[in-house]
Image (cartoon, rainbow, N blue to C red; front, side, top):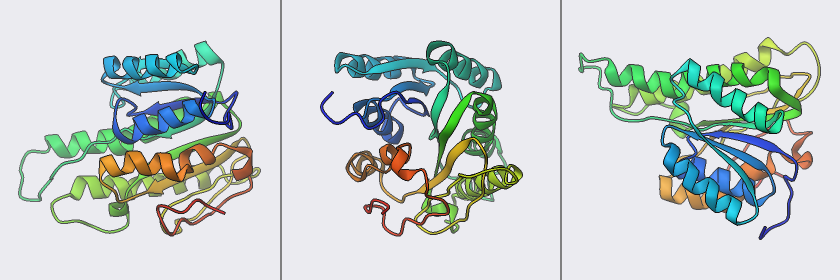
Length: 246
């Protein structure tokens, strides 16, 4: 591999991994030594990325996954656990956008966005939970519109607010025993604790997709979060998308 293996021995599951942010995170994790399961509806694209990762000496698994389908989620988690025995890092990245004006009588897009951006995060986390290793990390992708509304993007904004709320709920629901959930955004969102999970992270970054692919790689945040150096962080704040936490 071209870079130091700072995530050697880790097992990561990344949703929405066939392109964009998910692809960038998957490639970065692989370069850092993690075994990466790439999950997305476009299995061919995931397979192509996985082959490139393996050709570079990494470990990768391509999985056809529709995160809006509970059966797909169960099979995806089972496949990762069958191959590598556990999950150390879960990245809930799969997302869907588009306009949902209040004047539109058709709920189809609204329902699809909620199912992809919010319900899927809940279901994937629930499915992975029994298989997470001690000190595992969950990284949920939010957005700056999870902090304020944008005209015409009601469903997208609501789901990104919801991801942050779900993160708080999940952590607080398990807050009675032990260390180690953290929530990261461009502004502070809060924190809670859980005995086995090293961190639960919400990342909200307002960047165009092509810029984000480069930014994810350059700022090293997703690759840094699963490392032992981040284990003591909780309730952290990222005030600048290009600044690595200190």
